[in-house]
Length: 223
Image 1 (spheres, rainbow, N blue to C red):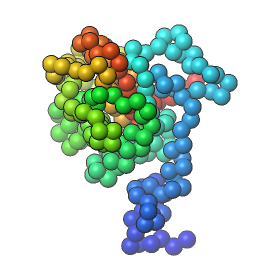
Image 2 (cartoon, helix red, strand yellow):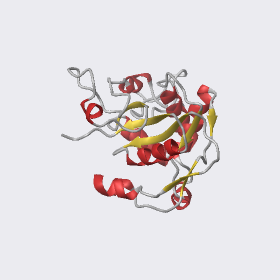
Image 3 (cartoon, rainbow, N blue to C red):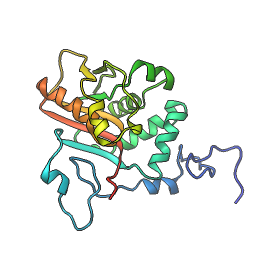
Image 4 (tube, helix red, strand yellow):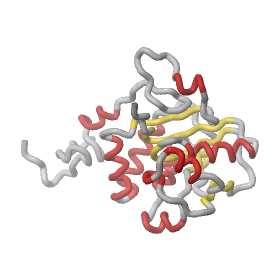
């Protein structure tokens, strides 16, 4: 097959895109197909399980979680590309794809904050970019500064589960006086859930009644 050098290429398979395709070709988009998952913790459900065994024992503090899929190919590769490419190129189609999964939008959309130093090294916050496009798609309020990270913490990917839990303690504070009854927290990848759990508890203490999580990926529990 000859590549059309004048046409943009798919960011996954690198074949030429058709005029009606953007960022990813139709074939690669088919791999975004959603598996059945628990709308509380976000973990994939086995065909034999109608309910999530994890949430039956210990449900998370938030109400509903919406995701695109697991942190596996192709989404893990897309997340990596998201950090390396101009934010609009992948942030907008990824945010819209996630927004289409949300059946009952929140009144306010707030991204997980990153420390100013990390924001400077990356040039943008992926979660902020996602939240912006989700809010625009559903025409809901959006506050990129609704939370504030008050101390620098080591990168979560280098820590084990217990270290991640301690890593987020006393890390975040609320950054506005008033919050509506229904708020969504936006992150790119949920691994242990400790970060969004800490933010959820802050919102609950403020009187927020319904809290949702919007994320691109959930890291599966390895057996």
